[in-house]
Amino acid sequence: MKTYGETPSSTRTRKRVGIADFAVTADGAVLTTSGLGSCLGIGFHDDRAGVAGLVHVMLPTAPDEPTNVAKYTDTGIDAVLNAMYDEGATADDVTAKLAGGSAMFEFDSQDESIGARNVATARSTLDRHGVPITAEDIGGSSGRSVRFHGDTGTLHVKSAGDERRL
Amino acid sequence: MRVDIQSLGTYNRLAQEGAEHAAASLTEMTGIETYVDVTNVTLMSKKDVEDVFGGTEFVGVQIGLGGGLSGETALAFDRDSAASIVDVLVPGTTTDDDGGFDEMARSGVKEIGNIMMGGFVDGWADYLSTSVDMTPPTYVERAGTDVLPNGALDRAEEEHVFVFESQMTAIDEEIDAYIYMLPEYGAFAEMLEASDDHEDAIPMDKLTVFDEMTRQGAERAAENVSSMTGFETDVDVSRLSFVPIEDVPNTTRDEVYLGTVMEFKGTPGGYLAILFDEPSARTLVDATVPMELDDPLGDMGESAIQELGNIMTSGFIDGWANVLQTSIDHTPPELVHDLGTAILSPIAGRLGQSQEYAFLMDSTVVTPEGEFNCEIYAIPDERKLKEALDSLLIERSDQLEANRESLF
Image (tube, rainbow over the protein chains, first blue to last red):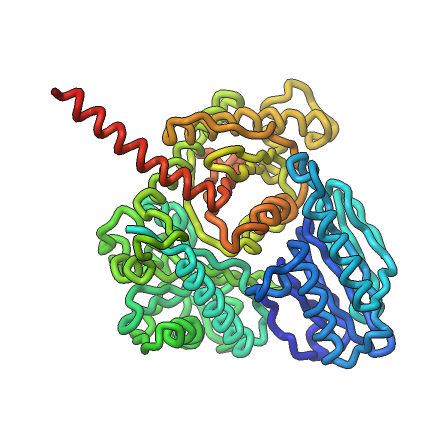
């Protein structure tokens, strides 16, 4: 699933990120994604360059030659960071916030849930890129929807009737 | 005939890319930012096609395809969406007393339809290395299945038809558009046909049996909910679609549901979700809990929904077991109260570890007066589904043998 209007434009202020999808903004757009269950949403922000990105990944690690890199945590992080570097972000200035990765059902909780594995893969991949995690709202048994403000890097998380600001 | 799953996947991707081109054209021409919500290939009985389209009024265009890809297409907007688009394209056009569009508005719809469908078809022509001919667009303003090209269903000789469906939505406005393509069954079946030794193939005729299983399962579930609540119910739609695994969560609407989810064990393995939107859940809680509740969707209400989910699950499973003539093991149904997409995401995630696409069987249980509706999603594990279909073939032929013997 792709969103349209990837070209920066001052008139476009909101971009929707689907499942297995990402978006990058260099003009402070609000990036949104909903329905994060075991999926993981990762918001990236480079304050100095004014570039931000949001990815909604579904599974921990990609197979060889994945058809959609944004479906997997490891390749999804690579893809959104590369797209941000193309927009002028630099590796040293990017920080990340995580939301999602819950275990909603018993049948998904026995060994290690998909959500927990997504979070673990995100930590190791971000560590490899040298990107620090500055906030997180992960785990539990409820789904989440997020709004990520590209200008400030603020992540609003809505879950089970609550709204939190990271 | 056996169908190659990978080629079904390829055609689904072509339809998705085609719809993205079409959405981009719409954005370019109107400035309304749109995205493609979901694209699926559905194998539907003719009756279900009628159910899916029933009751909605569409405005749009029909375009026939010939050459390398033969079939019928329709681009449909609901009436309000069409009005918003026409307003941008040809400002100042008028509608008649019935809310119909004038000549200028109609030609605006035809023009955008032609451009969008041109974008939709291009990728197919490239992939098939051939040219695809398009008839000039015909403007249509109709209700229900009539938006489909004249006779498209009558001409379909088989009981089932393939329908490619893409849904497009605008980001900031209430605009919904749909692209439908009904490829000519025979020609498309040939495109899908797998060689006999293809290990990734699914027997086509057995797939329609599975469609029947889903209908039976949904009907039993509906009967159970009727006897518990006193509401008369009906299964409105039951269809089998083939979607990329990451699109599975998007088949629900972006709203909060209450219901139950459970995992099938053995053959066929997979998942079953029985979901009520919150207004429906409130209605059912009122009908089944004998006292007035402060919060109908609090703990008491949730346990009433859990109970309904349990009995509907057992009805559904009876329906499946009846067709498969086997018992089906499963985990206890678990209560869930969350966004629909979040509910289906762990299911998509677990299946996505071993498959790229999913066969999704969705049914909707409704009541004649519209008091509530219930969405039932059955998503089998692809490998287990193949095993189940193969053994279905064997069991049925065994029965045939036995019957023959009993004649003598």
